Image (cartoon, rainbow, N blue to C red; front, side):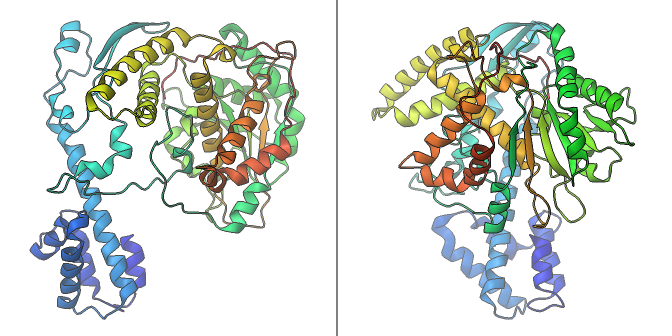
Length: 514
């Protein structure tokens, strides 16, 4: 933002570069200036907006700024964002002053005696109460866990972090930079607050995304949900069966992204691909660590530069690449032309932190919809509902997808929709309209339900119904349409409803951290 202001002020058009640089240094704490610091003091308060605007005008005048409303507005925006950034840093820095806690937590006494009073000053208490329990991890043995705060509230209750003298929220408002932060029914990602404004992409980009090709490859080979001893064999069988499609894609523009569920699967898939690939083509797998690193691996920290990598295919775990990375060429266009879902991407269903996050999302939604006005009734009802839902989640952790209750089944569908959409987003960094639209291939047979089990879970059918329900909602349909219509148009054109593969249904569990 500062660099954009400097470009706008090229050749000291409005104000001296020295004054701008001084302002920047004050906002990041490298210099001091009582006038600028006074401006920052009022930047986040709606009640003090007149003081804020007046102080900025005075500062610009004192620094011989030529009058220009647009430039002045950009200075105001920069100072508001800088003040907000400083405020969030203050909250983050408070964590540094926590009582010393042993990082290993190997001794039970250390685990039980550690207190979290410092965090509790900035995080509201968990609605269910502090959770303390244990689970048996197949790889790590008995694990103790606890949840002590409702951290989700920081994301969507930011206006209440600062109050006026009258107890009203003093801001800031919340700007969500990911459209998939709004996905009704998703307990983990959906932000359950009213949406007042939407930033819409340019029409030509929406049109290009809507032209994407979505192809169900129709393999009956089931990777996700199969036993651990069968997964590697089934994964390589899927690759072998779709090799013709892979080779055709390698002749098209853009590199290939292939999705699996773990780093070990990524290495298996890349090794097998390199055995089959011809004409000098090769695959690389994403690696979390540099241990045992070889030329067919690319570190997770370096994937943003994959456009310059010698490999033509990147194989990556779904949860390691779903968001946070722009993997583009020198012109800012996506380095990938297509994505292959070699597995049905799933979270670890019985993972504690995921369950806590989903419980928080469920409770927040229940709190909003419960309708009780008395604070004590709301608190008692919420605590009771939290306990009931946690017990339900504990029982359903290893159940088949088709057997989940409606709330949890909807959450699985919505969460998978967000995950797939985020991965698809790696291909939607579009700057060149002349390049072909993205291509998406669903390869794992587990995307479909068994023809013999018509009550089974069919993800592709469920996704169609889920997006239909969001867009058809009379109150919020316009939000869903704005965010997801281009993806939905492409999905419905390429994926027919009520197709079945002869497979069984199960829930996939991968005990691996990302």
